[in-house]
Structures are given as structure tokens and as C-alpha cells.
Length: 311
Length: 250
Image 1 (cartoon, chains in turn brown, yellow):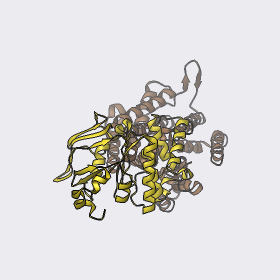
Image 2: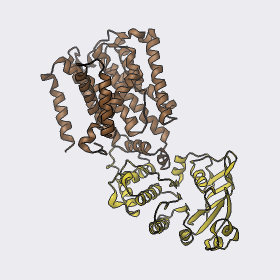
Image 3: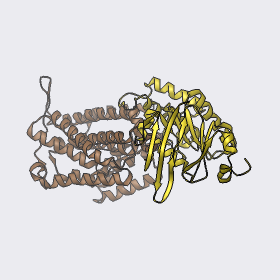
């Protein structure tokens, strides 16, 4: 109850946010939700499976570009978003087969390399991606289920609710996964891969599953971006974009379910405040993260639930 | 009596050094076997080879007459070979209960379920609770494993090893780092588990008093080879073993 009440309060606040918040606040809230999804996927790999990936922006970009191409060819929001998730998942599965053969720094470097390969593709494959101009004029297509439903997405409020529904569903699924036998297996691999292998579990298979799910979460976050911005450009695939979920997760807490979500909100709140005073906001944010990591290794959430508290 | 594990000319070499050389081992089902020998004799390497943690350079390994020489460690667990490690190897961030639950779920092939809750796995939970009682850790089941004492962590590692319900359990120095009283208690627990679970145990151990008191069969290794094997009294009276390892006071 102690943990569900704040969560329930947050969901109610988010449901009624469009009633009292302006367009900018909604825009900011959507970005917080996107980063939350992105960070949750990252933390499935890092906090739960013990694999530090620097290439998650690659899958975010695959989701974003796939959704954009679908929307440009076939104006259905649902097809765009789901298509983005599936294609990002397939990319993560294929690249995962190569990456999960290694661990520690070797794994991190491989993910960084593949992430930058995706960035290069986005930059150079002009016919498909629009090169450095990116893809522009992406419609915020209506949410349509033939014969059942057709919702106009032009007002920001409507799209906000679509993002909120996808986010709540994805967070719920994530909660179920990490508290399931499969989630326990991921945690076993994080704690000791040799011990996990010696209790009869194929470590490689489960690393690949974790990598694929993380890629799908990055893909979902990416797929929700083009309808918001009407454009996708190569920097979404850049390695520096992969650092955002790392920072958000460190801010919120690695070993806590809610850590990446709280961290994502903090990331955007701090960024929004700091950029009013200086364009070097990343330096200030970096110092804050540094202080938090040194003082509260479990992140902000650990201040409320204790260091080992897994919410 | 049936042979549970058999090796043929098993060898593992690290450069010029023969960690294990031409080992022909026969572990008998139901016998409590101890593998002893001086440091560097190849005991841990032998355990690593039998459990699949290392692949041999020469020779073959048979488990119940099926060849398992190149079988991956997790597949060996599935056919009934479990192990513990010389250096503590548990899941330190997980609770004591989760440490036991994971191998039980794996044994029941339920660890791949992505959406069901852990508490809904009633058969696995009941089995894990039973094992926690068997290894005297029931009262500490909700504690993070990494925060327990060394002795309790050793008990937990034993619990993890038996949670796979193995036919053969290889324990590499299960009582290392414990005081003499704890050591005797743990090894008596191993013997009790062997009897109750009908599991064949093979342990690497340095405490000779305990080894000779508890073992049914002893394998002595030296410089990667089997120096001698036999019943405790035969080993005690083996002059070559006394000269090489035991000394005269045994």
C-alpha cells in the first residue's frame, strides 16, 4: 500500500494533466514518458541483467525511423507504433546474437559500435532516411481500428493520452516481467553468471531475451517520437543519446523498479530549470549525477525505500 | 554398485603444466567420495572438468555411460550433475529464498515464464522452503544473501547445489573459511543430505579428520594424477599417500 498510493496518485495526476496544464507541460510530460520507457529497457539490461549497453539509441532510432516510414506510407498511428516496436525488436534480436557472446566492457563496446553503425546508416543512407535532413513532414495520423475506432490525433492532448496509455501498459508489463521467474533469472545472471549456468540455465539465451526486450522498449520510445515532432533526424541514433537513459537511471536508482521512471522525470525537470540559466546544462547535470552516485549509490529512490529496496 | 561418472584418460593442460593428466576416475553411485591432495594437485580442475566449467584437452567423460565430455554446464545440470565452487558463488543481491527458488524453478522448467508471479509458483515455492529448512536457513530467508555471515553463505551455496535435485553433487571445499566446529557440522549436514536425498556426493576437502570420518571412498590426487584411491583405512595405510600428502601423524 505504501508503494501503490504514490503510484496511483501519479497516474491520476497524469490523467488529469491536460485539464490544467499548458501545451508545453504536455510536451514535456510526453518526453518524460518516452525517456521512462527508454530507461526502463536500458535498466532491464543494466540493473536486472548486469549488462551495460551504450547502443540503446540505435534501437530507439530504428523504432523512430520505422514508425516514420510507416506513417509516411500508410497513415495509421497504431501501425506506425507497433511496426516500430517490432522492427526494433528484430534488430535487437539480430545484433543481440552478436553482442551477448561477450560481457563487461567487451559487451559495452560492441553495443556502442553497433549503435554507431545504425547512426552511420541514418546519416548516409539518404534514400531511406533522408540523410542529415532526416525524415520530415511525418503526420500525426489518426488512431484507427477499422470498424471500431477513429480518433483524431491533431490536438496534442489526444496524442498525450495515447502516449500515456502505451506508457502505463509498458510499465505494467515491465513490472510483471521483472517480478516473474524470468525476471529472477535475469537477476541471477546479473549476480553471478557462472552460478546461473550451474543451476541449469542457459545464460546466453536469457541475455538475448533481455537484450531483445530492452531493444523493444527503446523501439517503443522511439516510435512514439515522430508523431510528436513530425520529424526524425540522425542524432536520435547518436551514442550521446544512449547516455540519456544511463543518466536517468543513475539519477533514479539502478536497483529499484521505479528508479528509471523517477530519474527520467528528474532529468527533464533539472534540464528545464538549468537551461534557463546556462546553455551548458549537461555540465551541471553531470555534477548532480556525480554527487548522487557518490552520496546515494542507489539513486534518489533509495532515499525513500533504502539502498537495497526494490520497489 | 553402479558407476555414476567415469573418465577415460582425462587431461587438461595450461601451457606446459598438466593440471589434470590421464585421469581414469570411477565415481560409484551412493558412495560419499572425497577427493584430496596437496595444493595444485588438480582437484578443482577435475571438478571443473566434470561439471563442464572447463573443457578437457584429452580424454572423455561419461555420466551413467552417456558421453558428456563437451556438454555445456547448464545442460549437465539438467541431466543431474550439480556443483558448488571453491570461491563463494551465490546470488548476493537476491534474498536467501530467491537464491534457492531460482534453481528449483530451473529444474521444473518454469524460469522462462515472463508474466506469472513468483508466489504463484506454488510447487517451486514449497520445494524451496523445504530446502531452506534442510540447510538451516529458514529463519534468514528474507535477508539479502550477500549480507549473511560466511558460514551461512556456505550453507546457502550447499542449498543451491542440492536445489537442482542432482544425482551427483560435486562440492569444492564446502567448508572452507569455517571454524573447526562449523566445518564438522556442515560436512555432517552434507552426509545427511546424501542419505536423505539419495544423492551421490563427491567433495574436495582439506580437513583430514573429517574426510576420514565421513567418506566411503577417497581419491588422492597429486600433480594432476590419481595417486591412490580406496576406502579410508586403505588410504590411511598407503605409504605413498603418507609420504606425499598425509604425513606420519594420521
